[in-house]
Length: 427
Image (cartoon, rainbow, N blue to C red; front, side):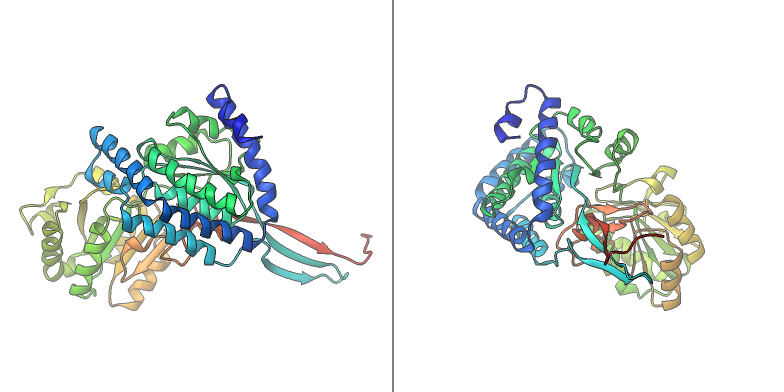
């Protein structure tokens, strides 16, 4: 299937069908590609991003202007926005992915049976990965890079609000593929803003082996409801920070402010703060001062409202809302039992943190909070594949089945069994 055939397909369904055929063929090439070839493609793509900075940022300005005219919030625009520093981070992430060990071909375990058969469990690519995402254009580069590193072909359907930026970044990825002699169909971006493409992708059972959705609650719900393909679910990031009675006040201030306000629109941003009632008088006023000074709206229960007249009364809906904005719900709790119960009831099993000087309390939090990532004395904004040493991530999987947590190249592999014998037959 040539690029010309894909580009000249009569309608969207035919075009996606053609992309699926091309991706399947490319995946067969990638599965046999050496680590050196894949890493060369990633380095060349990073170089192309740096060389194309002006063009990418120009496309991004167009996306931002259109999103602003459509009434996007400041936090949403921050997710779409690229600048020279962020774009350098995108290029560096590709190089970081290249620096990771190649997962393909890794011998996960091996053993010998009493009959002499030697058995190995070996990592292999999944095949073709479909990624459906919103807003953040850097996902185009991250997802393409991780799929390439893991030997998978990728079909990317980016958000309409970052369409121009994603097209520009995809061109750079294709430049890397060409330089390494790999098929350009290894990383394809669906070339339309039409939402029909999402439904069509979810039914491409012949060509796509797994779907990874990354976006808001409505997108995830649609994918989970309509997909006829296995899904690696990235649910909403309804993350919590819990200030325990034994927390150091200055540490609590520092961690909470970063967890909410470093980038309020990312999935690892804290959305609900829980404060031990025993620490409220000593800790909460300083935390509220920092939040208000940084421009954060605070919504609190009746107990929290007594500490500051600027606190907006919280409703029941606030405890289950992912704001993705400079808004934080705050609640006082009567100890760690109530904190854990609240998190497990309202959280999305994404990322939750405890701030405490009590090691036993931290261990109990780790054991009993049912989330993909749990932290002690650290910001929830560390919920990121790059910060975990994966180079980048394709999302944070919140399901209980693997992969769970940040999904990097290793997590986008399956395995097969390789069995070696010397004429054994089964009796």
